[in-house]
Image 1 (spheres, rainbow, N blue to C red):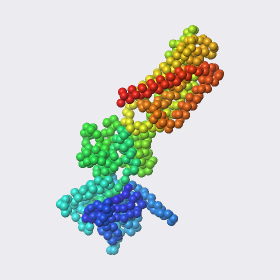
Image 2 (cartoon, helix red, strand yellow):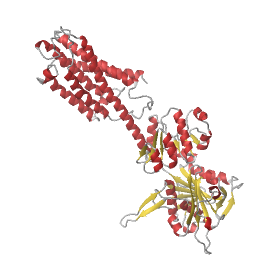
Image 3 (cartoon, one colour):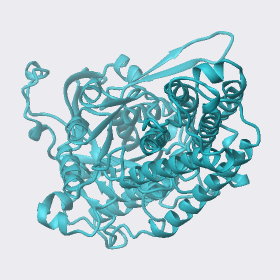
Image 4 (cartoon, rainbow, N blue to C red):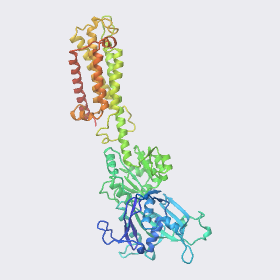
Length: 628
């Protein structure tokens, strides 16, 4: 954050140069017209041109402040600056440094802190009571400095400062016949529309008590923050990170609604929200239901909130209770809510959300303890990346499970149906041996499934709406695919067994062919090898099918993207290579896997593979046409 603008009654606007918390920059007086584009008619503020009012505003920004700037001197390089405290207060302290009135200098020159009234989110202001340096006569004044939300500070003011004059706010008219409060509101809105966070400053001399009664912490805050003299406004720019805009756009594409709950003024909040696409650029802040003040939202009943077509995207001037109320309204709409926060006041809403996310760098310890997740880089885009990764992992688990289950269903069905194939002794002739089934699960099912678990995110990963929280891993479509693919693989594999046995061979089922080889079992062993090879290539190729539940996976475009998953391709290629020794190595094939080498039967295997690929693509086409 950086203070870039000031406005003082009578003086008009000031422009502050410089970026970041390095206190290098100048202050220029512009008058009542903002001339940022041309920087014309500007007057640089120096020590001789600083009036009483200007000094008081800078003193308020410097002293009503608990942040700290530290400089580490490096003789050979530039000095290094570090900041401690709230970013808003750091920006104000940097402003004081640029005006040559930093807090350390003021304290060194005699300003003495007597009492502090910390910022309270319910009243949105902070005050301090200081004893000023002694005058030439040796007397010391007691000064109250207050900063906070413009409307909250103005409510405590009875007068305002214009140059060397203090005038009453009540019924005060300006040259254009508008009231002073209206003029301040107009200037505040002008800065807020630029996306600036606007703070108001006020002060007064305190004469109510003796010196020995100060600093005890027993002064009533309402008494301290009353009859103040309004000094001016300071606009602080908090630029969104460059990656925030594309991150919010990705959320919109993914069906994720981003709400902004902030303590800023509605105009400021709306300007920032427009900048990062939370609300459209042409949104009218005053008339749009997308932007609402916390005062208005808090006044609504739950029934009135639930009757809204859509909850406001931006809620400004939020208190902790407002944030909790918004989360409760989202929950009543059966929505899953993730809440980010960094301050102590955010802890109730972090607890109320389904997932509380605290900032790791700027977050308070209380917020971190209340949160479920700590965001180490304080970057909203990281949350979006985490959502994308979570979706990728979920879909990959579905692919992993679908591939394994489809293969298991196919294997079981082949064995169950084969119970009907019996030899002369009425013993069932199994198309797969026990060793073949175990080896198939070990080498052909598991490695491709692991490869599917490492599949990169698809191009539509963040373009699909969120799934229902009630929907588990096994959706209707996933279960349907498991059984459809499993049944078709079983049918094709078993058909290859039957075709070889009864079309290519003489239909001889042999005698005790499940136990071992004999010449009479030659046809069964060749059919068994064909069934084994067919089911193997179907399971391996099914890994390609499982890369996407609906999109075609055998197109040239899809196969080119598949090369990014080297683990998947390696498992498929190695699985195909392992099939060769299993079928052809003497002794291994006949004695362990209970099948023989095959020759022309490979034509049937490749025919089965072609039918399988054609069916898979046709099945997905039907799903794309019939399922939304």
